[in-house]
Structures are given as C-alpha cells and as structure tokens.
Amino acid sequence: MSLAVQFHDLHPTPASTSLRDEILTGFRADQKFASPKFFYDQRGSELFDRICKQPEYYPTRTEETILAEAADEIATIAGHEATLIELGSGASRKVRLLLEAMRPTSYLGIDISRDFLLDSTRRLAADYPWLEVHAACADFSCNMELPDGLCCERPVGFFPGSSIGNFDPQAAEDFLRGLHSLLPTGSGLLVGIDLVKDKATLEAAYNDAAGVTAAFNLNLLERVRHELHAKIDPANFAHQAFFNEEHSRIEMHLVSQLPQVVTIEGERFSFLEGETIHTENSYKYTVEGFQALAGRAGFEALSSWTDANSLFSVHYLTRA
Image (tube, rainbow, N blue to C red; front, side, top):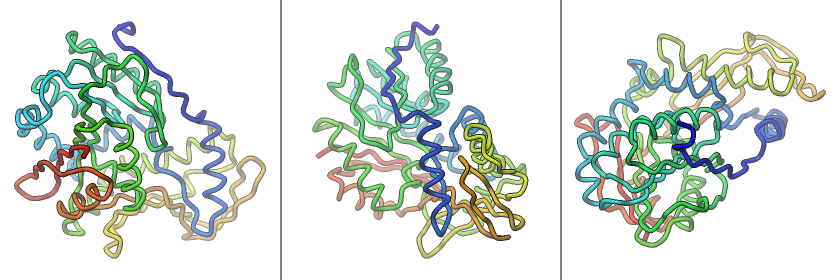
C-alpha cells in the first residue's frame, strides 16, 4: 500500500527545533503564547479527529453536509480532471465528499504531521485506486513550492475546517496572497469558513462536555515536557476557551492553577495563579467579510454555500 502514495518531504523545520525555538519565544512574552500548529503531533491529530465527532462541535458535520450537497456544483465549477490540493489534510475525510464528483487526476495532501499524513493518504490510495495520490510533509503556513512530479495544469486548492481562522485577519490575507503566488492563473480555491453566531453556540463548541478539547489543548504541554524534556506538569494547567466579541474570535488558553515555575532548556519561567498561555485563536467571519478579505489577496469569489442555519460557509474562489 505504501507504494501507492508518492511521498514528498518538503523539509519543514525539524519539529523539535521549531518547537523549542517557538515555545521559548512564546514563554518569554508578557502574554505567554504557543502556536496552534504544535497541537498536531500524532496524539494531537487523533484528539482533533475525536473533537470533530463531539455533539457540540458543529463545524465539521455542518461543513460535511454543505460539501456533500454542493459536490456536483463544485465539480461543475472546478471542471473534471483537475489536481486537488488539500492543505492541512489531517484524516482526509472531507475530501472524500468531493472525489467521486470531481474525479481529479491527482490528489496532494499537505500536512506537518508526517505519520498521520502517511496513514491517511495510504488509506485514501487504497480506497480510490484510480486516483494518483501524493503526500507532502510541509508547514503550509510558510512559503512553499509544489513538489516536483505533480501535474498542476488545473489545480484546485482545498482548505476546509475554517483553519484559516487560526490566522489573524492580516495574516490570513497574507496567507491567501501566498497561495495566489503559488497557484497559476485560473486556479480554484475551495475554503471552509466558520460564521459569526451566538456566543453560547460558539463557546460550547470549544468546551465539549467530554473534555476532548481540553485534552487536545493540554496535549501541547505534554509535547513540551516529552520532546524538550521540560520540567512542566500539565496537571497544573486547565483548559479555557471563550468568545472575544471585540475581535470576533474564539480564544483558547491554558490557565495556571497555582503559582509555579516551569523550566525549559534550562530557562525558568514563572507563572502566577490564573496566568495563561494563549494557544489558539479561531476567527469567525461573515460571508461578505471573508470574501472582501480574499479579494484583497487577489482572489475572486465565484460562489458560496451555507447551511440552513447559517452556521458555516464554503467558498469557491478563483485566482484572478
């Protein structure tokens, strides 16, 4: 089965080096922070897959419903025999809703979690023997090039899950501008965007009753302890998620439950009780607001779809 996937190592910064450098930088700040990309080691990716199945977490099932209902229309817009490029492919579940309708000649999954990427793309290759499957281990948040050997005459990017919401609006615009440079004129980009809605629904989605999101958040500290041999006890921190209405974003934090000192690479970091590590933002948009942002990055909004309750949206953009 492994031979069915053409693997491309685009040499992202080694995980241990990137983790060490960025965690030290984040912990030195007045408001301590960590990048959400460090959630996704093997266990973190598995936990996120479980988050997507929680009853409070509406984005995944809503986006999947939209994609299933709009698949034929999306295929008509994209055209058959395109190259489908999925950013942050994860379990590659949502793309399956598009494959039969679009019948792309090839698929490229891009993810920073090497083992999870290989597992998911091998399953995809086994289930779709007619599909040429590629996997690229890369940090797509950085400037990158498409791997050699991939036919990209008619590429369509696929960025589901409202993952672009993890960037602040200016960074999201810069990211889209980078994709604009990467993709040739006439390319398509299919993006999932979570919409602004009532605070209660938003906060419940990031504070599931089963505690899976809490475990996902705290797993970041497990990575720091294990990979950097840090003196840090994740049990001394608690998960917190809330909607910041002023900035239209969910914020996730890890809250110190007591005064404590953490040691990483020999450097000591003091925490007051109640002090937090800011681990993630998830910005929420209106349909018009996101399309305006994409327009500033050089994309034209060709079509969009929402569910009946206006919880989530999917946008088809073209590279002008």
